[in-house]
Amino acid sequence: MAKTSSVEKNNRRRKLAAQYAGKRKRLKEIASDLKRPAEERFAARLKLAELPRNSSPTRVRNRCEITGRARGNYRKLKMCRNQLREQASQGLIPGMVKSSW
Image 1 (cartoon, helix red, strand yellow):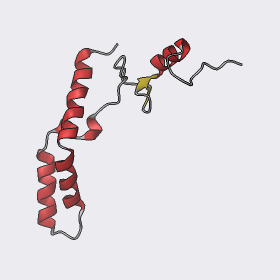
Image 2 (spheres, helix red, strand yellow; image 1 turned 180 degrees about the vertical axis):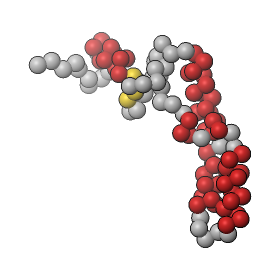
Image 3 (cartoon, rainbow, N blue to C red; image 1 turned 30 degrees about the vertical axis):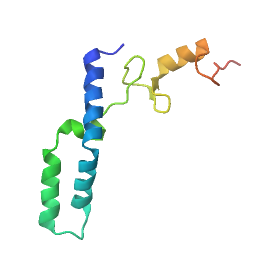
């Protein structure tokens, strides 16, 4: 089980990223539009830099929904490999069986 503080910090980052997503997208469009004057693009970059660091979606870490483990996650299932194996063995994941040959 991961530290509760790490999981909570990640949840705060996820919430901030969602909150600032629209503003960040608009500023990025302005900053990368070559048809606009250089001063306007530079001003957009400065405003982008003023936004909170944790509002960037790249700072959000994919974590297991069950344990909070940060490594070995399957995005589609939002679960780490350990929990995936454990739950598949117990038959809790529909359509998934442990292979044997």
